[in-house]
Length: 424
Image 1 (cartoon, helix red, strand yellow):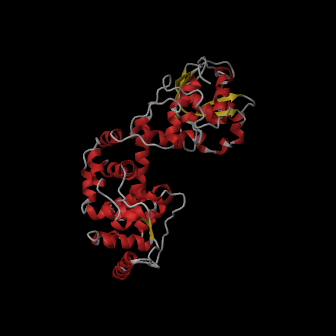
Image 2 (cartoon, rainbow, N blue to C red):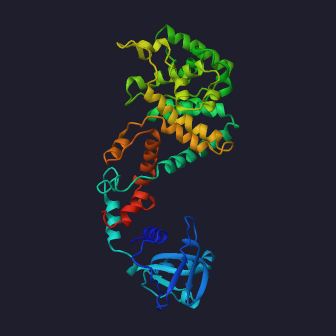
Image 3 (cartoon, helix red, strand yellow):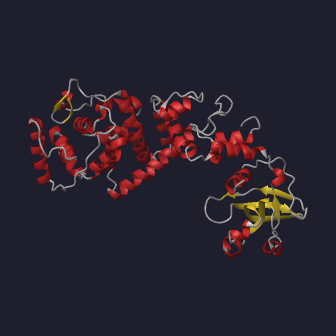
């Protein structure tokens, strides 16, 4: 038993019976178990109990042992002045201070099914994909957190975007550029691509977006790839970068993307060229994205994007490849960009003006294909049927925030397993 589990059992009222009484044998009726407090202070706020025909309103503090009241030094803390009940798993010491104030103590040891302890311990010790993998059956324990988890993720992303907006003086187009750069960088180069984008004054970037060579030159130059030109095209890019550097008074900062562990189609050379082409093709990119009505409209924005002709037979500078074909964006990559950058930005942009935006964004996710990665494969192995990106985005979020840290007590699946005698 630990305090977190005890709080969980109290919050969800997981007891074998509710014939509560204090240490003196006085019956206690819990009229309101209180609101679980995640901040400092008593564990449950605004509770109500009835004892000796008197109704008391105030806060409740929980401890594994009654002596924890002393060890935690609550006597000196004014936040605990309004305690109406001390709830403990085991009473191992009389607390004189509480007795003098007529604050009752409730011992829960005989009100809790001991099998819960072994269930919880087993969940925490498991080292499989998810702790409950052996007992989770989606046909018996339905998953209801899809929309809730995705909305949590969108809110978190929205908070990040709002911080960027504050830094960049509410310039949504600049923040979109940063978000797209992050998405084009994939896992290996996401942060580096974003740094490259943030190192560029978007006003300057916007002024040259009708010139694809200059867009590429700017991105390639900041990446440090044009220092020693190896062919004629590189010399052109270097000449343009030197011009832009002088014109816009660019810093000497060099941010070098990584090639290690990347398949050639995902090389940063290809992805930055494609990012340049996206802005070259769509001069009003932000408005197209914000005003799109469905996922098909969003996908159509990216379908014609490709790296410049130089990259048809190159993956890196100065090295001709045996593969000669246009480097276009695949459907999977387009959907990844939409999921990771476009939809969070649309949600953030509209959420204060459109009360229905949450439902509308969820519909976008439902129309996009389910993602393919190791986390989703792990969920599929549990027997869960996965049909769209709303589910995959939610499951990835849930896995990272609940399963990986083994936060089973705050998971609806974990709650069902702990409460149901047929599991674990």
